[in-house]
Amino acid sequence: MTEPSAGPLKRTPLYALHKELGARLVPFAGYEMPVQYPTGILVEHAHTRRAAGLFDVSHMGQVRLTAKPGHNAAKALETLVPGDIAGLQPGQQRYTQFTNDAGGILDDLMVTSTGDHLLLVINAACKDADLAHLQKHLSATCEIEPMFSRGLLALQGPQAAQALARLVPAVATMTFMTGAFFTIDGAQCYITRSGYTGGDGYEISTPADATEAIARKLLAQPEVKSIGLGARDSLRLEAGLCLYGHDIDTTTTPVEAVLLWSVGKERRVQGGFPGAAVVQKQIAEGAPRKRVGLLPEGKAIAREGAEIVIGGKVVGKVTSGGFAPGLERAIAMGYVEKAQSANGTKVELMVRGKPVPAEIVPMPFVKHAYYRG
Amino acid sequence: MADVKYTDEHEWIRIEGDVGTIGISAYAQEQLGDVVFVDVPAAGRKVAKGESVAVVESVKAASDIYAPASGEIIEANAGLAETPGDVNSEPMGKGWFFKMKLANKSELDGLMDQAAYEAFVKGLS
Image (cartoon, rainbow over all chains, first blue to last red; front, side, top):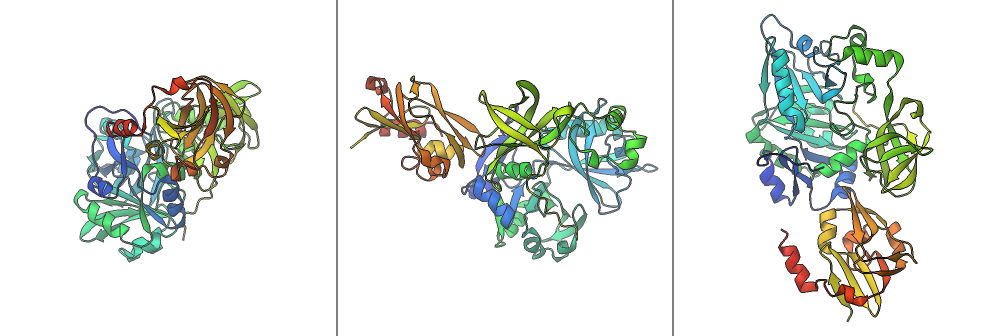
């Protein structure tokens, strides 16, 4: 999870709080981030599935897009992503991807319409490149405001709603993939009912200087514990969600990644986003490979990079793999050739040179529990 | 009183006669985080000093465990299959990995004693 980065590491508004809570801080996407707190990843994972976990995701990038006079921000953004953005009603949120001319994925992102502008949440490691990409293509049509100093808190789990509703009663009735402005302690926050765990929860965008006070208020709720990036990774893997730079990147298309659900129906026909021809061809003829779930037998863990083999022939590679605390077993996802991608297909995963029998299975590994009202 | 020594890979070896019991240190388990699986060697396997003989998997990563000396594996800790968390809770006790018959105890001469290992760990932080 750690990666080298140039220059000194950046800190989120919660750095001092992480230290106080005894977090183990590691370099991640150029930031010093908590990978775990003293109780450890297994306890944090279980707590998030049972109660509510608070994650600092302030390293992610937040960008506001506002149409210049005579232009439409949603239509403008649609020239860079395959999602149906023009169809977003005020307060609706959608998941999409920035694509390149080959249909590859430059980044994946969340887009919310507030009615008069769009709020984007982009990956930490990609945010400078994404911002340059937006500036290059949308400067004529949109005001592009990076809000990289803002805080972003994710409150996730079945008790997230009751905990957050004590501070902001109106969040209780919000449904999955919607957002609205709320005031917490005089600070204007934008809250969406969304997340990256497969469970119910919220993401709360906060002014930088109010982030710590809001985080402390949330941690003071009996349901809430602080959770690090380690559990964030095991939770999203159980939910079958992609991690950019691992499960999706510039060489994978939304079709190969089985993200076609996020490509607008009209947009599949009309195109108008980078790489549309490639995506349309793959929709019509099938993609050469497909992202699949993998369930290894036994205890060995097949991690990223492990080869997927059938009858001695390499048919793909694991892109994420680990221990699923909720299932008490190893799980993985990876890409295999289309012809070998059917559920139930028996494969072998090469773990330290030894073949581990595994089966291609549907995802998610743990059922999603989104609140749809 | 058994003699315990440490490697710079954060393994410990408890020496009783010509048998060594091997595990990882408290510092090592803390660095690894929650251990979820230990791949222990089979009894009867002959190993050379420095050879990778076991793998400890935490939620985060896999780490190799190296034989601190040459010899023959005589027993693996079967209990770890059910409770790998013993490596976290009792790294020097129930969380041991394997026992081996030592071929040449002089191979252990270069290892650290408790005090030297504590100083070594201190120097890492």
